[in-house]
Image (tube, rainbow, N blue to C red):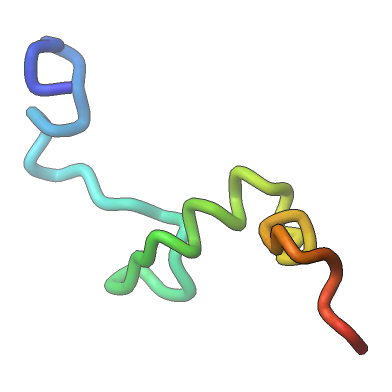
Length: 50
């Protein structure tokens, strides 16, 4: 990322937009995005009980 001329690392104005609000971004936000906002897909032990 640092070697790319177009990387978000080089843009001081870039901020993540996946968090619960504009000032908070957690790794879990990124993982949930990657797994279609479905926490059950993230759980290696299977779905959480309801």
